[in-house]
Image (cartoon, rainbow, N blue to C red; front, side, top):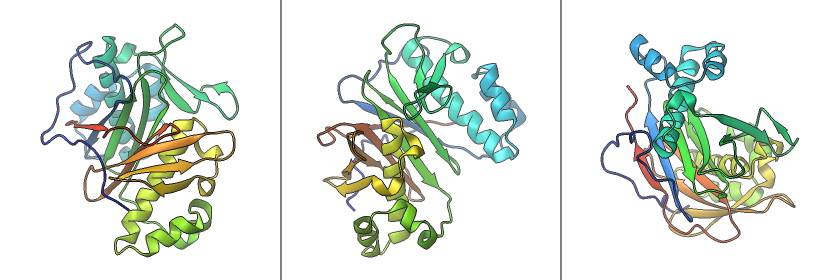
Length: 264
């Protein structure tokens, strides 16, 4: 498995003010991410993050039982809305989001999207969170993007092998000295692929077969009728495995641009 192919920034980035950040164009993909001390956020910070969300999302997050899950939800959705506010100029709590499941052709769950009231959207979106990491992906209109992050997981790989890995993928990780971490990257690749397509876990991950390309990029063959995916691994931190994918027949055109931000 080759090294991640990304364009990292050396310092923390401030989230741009509303309406001041251009949406990605062409094949550009942006990654916005943060490490959050989940479970230990101050009351004032939780209130600030809550102020960025709409009442329905606040209510949903409030039903999570564990403080860590509530903090992750607040941080991820605050980041998403603030970045979308930077692109659209809409205040974060007024940003309208929807979701659509391509598998059952229903609204209300599945892949998130920005509601605009029209037939076109200025930007495509996806988000993920795991452990202390929250991450948002932006892509140009019509570029179906998915992102996944895995951090802080202890996994019984033998139990998961048959449901996640194709035989050749498992064999490739067996040849690695860092096989545990590489299995997490393979998992993140597959999750980002099914999120890009909009099918999510209705597609068996074992049937999404990833292949190494160059410079930290990869491709994935999907079940019949879904198409192909091009992807890139994301070099966020040594304890993090993350990947971004787009529905695309050809290889990844350029490195995703990383923006690390501070939350708290």
